[in-house]
Length: 167
Image 1: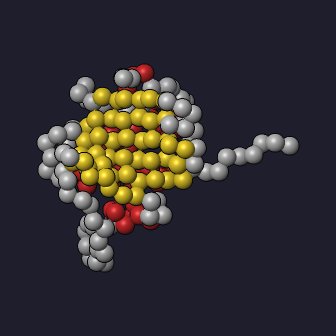
Image 2: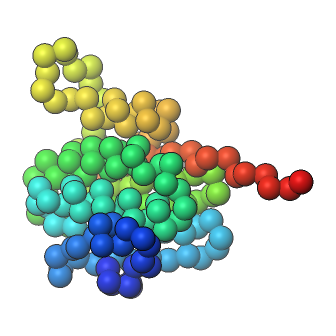
């Protein structure tokens, strides 16, 4: 387990470094080259959505994937907001994985087995567009895994193609 203060620094470290409440745990691992992962446990509070965004931004910048920061921030915001509205009293898990060199997977788990549904929000609706945005940003590569005591919603983004630096 790596405490938030152990995150590597960058030129924008003070701005990027997530500041989590003491009850929050950050778990990081790197089994092989492209199975890098990190997970954070957050309470069900409104400020957890912004903490999830900061966490995802920091990890992507550490991995050199700055091109994915904006889309990932939108995706994790929508998934964490949906999770915070489930009424659960357990902790929300937010994770980011790099299962291959071309995929970044964002995950949000909670204690509810209610499956999120993408709806057609009307032009005057004040909500209901979140999953449609996730669907659009991931080109339909998102889904839900039901667990015995909850679910995990995941969304996959494709990383930019590696640059061929040979002469």
